[in-house]
Image 1 (spheres, rainbow, N blue to C red):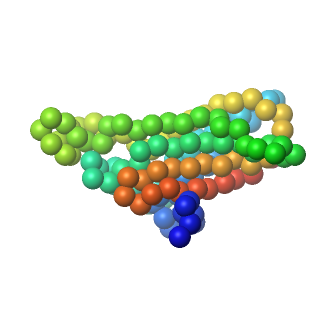
Image 2: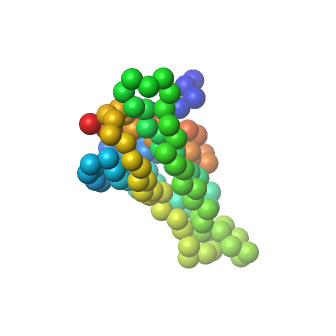
Length: 123
């Protein structure tokens, strides 16, 4: 079994979807979403815990960690599971500077279905 699972994000709700929102001069803004086409449940019992983003520049030996977003509110409260009105949505924005091309790599963690991976080129 593979450590990181991958699949087409249009048919699988756990895959992190990478979208380049803006690239001007040397600044890049990226949006990473889990459940873009098929919504992820995001309940106390079944939720995305975090999303992380890396950039691997062409010609470099290693990727750079851009950032990580943790999602902590999943409907739980002192009254029990799914009794709160607060549920975080697994959507994160990252902004960084680079003049290089390369690839963006995103990871997400589902508390039930494990680690997921996706990548997109950064032209």
